[in-house]
Length: 134
Image (cartoon, rainbow, N blue to C red):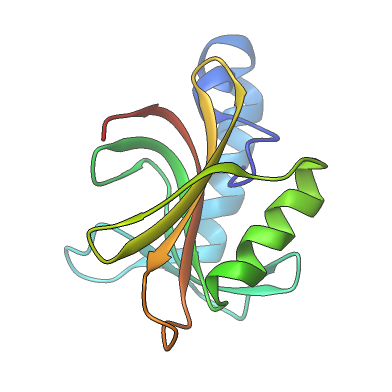
């Protein structure tokens, strides 16, 4: 879902049972702590070898979609996503102390990777956004 290969946004209309099954599995594997806008894995969980630290199942900031904070440096996360979708992520920017790259997969589906612009940063946000306002 975070690599834009599946979309809860599309499933809402095209396959509600599939969305419910995904939501049930997701809620069984993740837990919300307090009023945080994210959930955390109940047990060690990874995506393509990158440890998931937090999940944002509906939105993050001005983006609506599905995203994960992974325990990986920006370049490793970017490389993993490019390998997964079979295309390099382009449209890369650095500014406001952030690095980001994105790839539009389809209309209303943009694959994004972003992290703080600091070589010491060891966590990166990866996600699929259906609507994103910069």
